[in-house]
Image 1 (cartoon, rainbow, N blue to C red):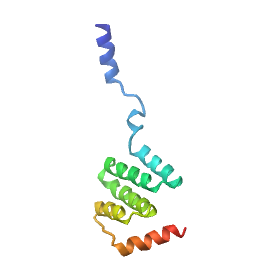
Image 2: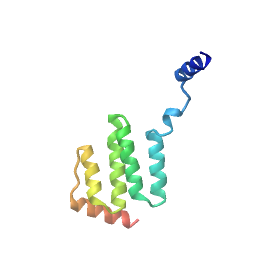
Image 3: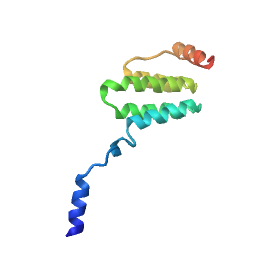
Image 4: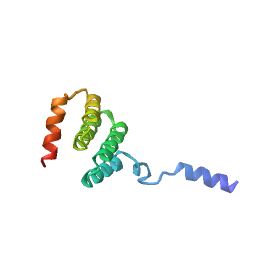
Length: 105
């Protein structure tokens, strides 16, 4: 009986920060680290995961960050797919132009 009561009490408790461990903020931090280390495809996937997890009014920024990382990785098709999520589509010419400018950095 005591074990059941303890289980019930623990289930009612919420550990501070537990909900944030794998939340959108952590995904964005991971994406930033991946990008800084040159793993742009992984960063793009992390931003895509964050875009699916944030409220609707924050999604476009995440999709655009993912698209930028795909362009840095040289994958124009994946970048185009992410921009479509925002309601804006880039053309191949835009992708080539942006890819060229990111490589020039």
